[in-house]
Image (cartoon, rainbow, N blue to C red; front, side):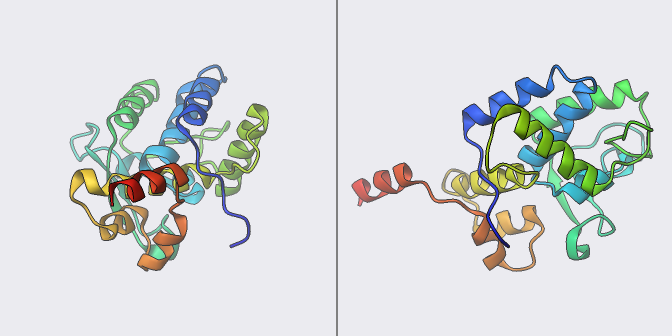
Length: 192
């Protein structure tokens, strides 16, 4: 897999979200960042996400993302509950786009779906502008998976839950995404 994308710290996340607020397509860009950080979507999933995967049949925004097998890696579709911050950003974007029920959530400059390569390049440019070395379009996904794993003790969940949210077929793949933290490890050892 080569060099792993950097996991973002809390300050990095704040800088990233603040930075995109001043872009030409600020609301779209904020949704892109949050789809990566708060739902763990891959670049191809962000590019392929359609409003039909986000809104209910009555046209209102749902409470989860329905990642269809057509856009998911290895056709492993899944449902991801919507984080409140992501849902609020999607509501605003849905309104800006005049409440569509179909079509791309993340539109290119020409109004169609962005390509996966376009999403990868977009994240690359934004991270370069911020001087965040080692970050890529996969950084948000690694951050989501790592943070999800760290929340397991608080929620009573298991790594299987994180695996399903990530859309991985094997638990060993999910484990590769989780970054350890030396400070947390020290705290654990002190409690033993």
